[in-house]
Length: 46
Image (cartoon, rainbow, N blue to C red; front, side):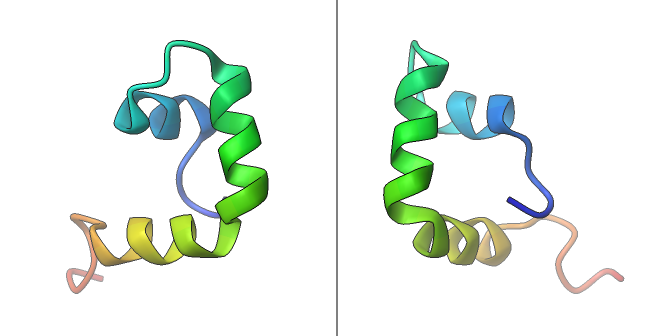
């Protein structure tokens, strides 16, 4: 993912295992990027 790291995504998704997060990223990479971009707190400030 461009701006977020895997650990941040794991925490946001509340996954206890990083492997689960990796698996979901593989399945839903485009959707996750759109959601993270939409909720980026710095969006519109730059």
